[in-house]
Image (cartoon, rainbow, N blue to C red; front, side):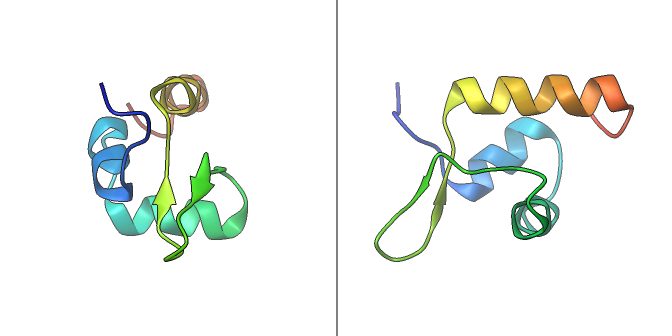
Amino acid sequence: MKPALSTAEAARRLGISKSTLIRAVNRGDIQPAFRTPGRHLRFTDRELKEIKQRLTASGNGG
């Protein structure tokens, strides 16, 4: 199991586009687990489950 997922994989698991995920991070709606030295976003499975629950509860996805 991977310790952290890329933006593309995280977006795929959330059922949203990569650009939508990046916009949500830039707005502060979603927090990545960390950024790599190259400034790439990384997400954990646990965080994605929490985000998916929030999206489902608000009716905005998943």
